[in-house]
Length: 426
Ligand SMILES: C[S@@+](CC[C@H](N)C(=O)[O-])C[C@H]1O[C@@H](n2cnc3c(N)ncnc32)[C@H](O)[C@@H]1O
Image (cartoon, rainbow, N blue to C red; front, side):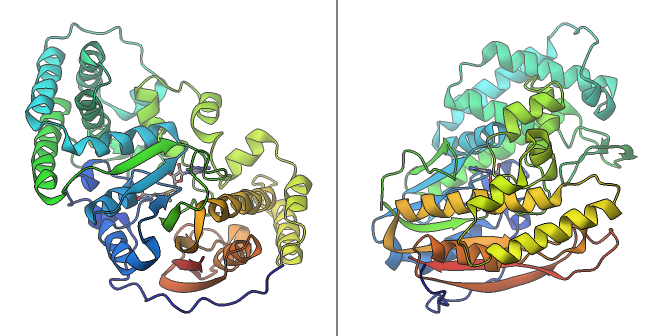
């Protein structure tokens, strides 16, 4: 096993920001609000600073989410590839990549959807419970009319995918209950401002038209790609073809990327219940929430055995033991011990896959945060760096960007948490 060393050669992050909020106003990036994303401007800076390592190789984001990093790399004139395993999130990202399509064609398609929706006959009044909880009768009628009109006109061409994105991106603003900013739908919370579906659709179309025009002037040519694929295998990517990786994996903090889009997937008729959500959205993801491991009945010992021989083998067993003990003090509900073991077993596969596809001198940046389920601290950035070195990367260094302790704050502990960049040298 290689000795653990500290990478020293990377410049620090200039603007120190890694959050999605700055993207909301940016052309194309702001088309779908995805709070788990990071800042496009920051990614552009990283690409700029690492042209040396890229040296004609591919820019890869193995956890591409709604495509922030690959779009930012495209802006910097770099060929980029993203992998995403959650089908709804992938479809959003792929739709965004259609920004270079003919604006008039999109405008015409969207106009036809809106006109047809307004002529739609009334629907039968049976909707999924979640939808009935989240929308007024009028909003449901108009949203389902837009959906029916889109379905009739859709040919899965680039412009029809742009119109699909337009529809799904207005769902939260048209709900009168708490649906933002994170995944949980809170039917008991009322919103002060609620958009009307036809107005929201028309205004989103206008925004997208304007953004497409701006980006078509700003970006020389489309070069970004995103595939439905698993970061744990990086299947289909050539060995040693990647020069730079900038990504943000799921954190081990119980955030559920399937539940995050339950509202949208339910509206689209893609999921009916909890079991469906697991099969269609969660199953293929890195295990980073307790729902995932409990639904799959993951065996902890199998996971820990996969981590035999790594430097934190003993430490992770101790943490998992503490988490199992804590569970009994919390009504025995959350299997955080299994979650942490499964998370690192999955991340080991991610690092092995990255070692295969990365060139010898590649640079890798993971935006990561640590976590403290039940108040037991898990040094994610440290263990992640150790995994990277274990599979053959040279060195790692962690650069803190900010403190965070929001997720666990309301529970009964106050473990200080941090978020930052884990820089790994090829
Ligand atoms: C923190 S988010 C990334 C957000 C992204 N940086 C952006 O700006 O949109 C992590 C993403 O990883 C995806 N994901 C989880 N497991 C995956 C896997 N095994 N392979 C590929 N993507 C995965 C999740 O669905 C989620 O979209």
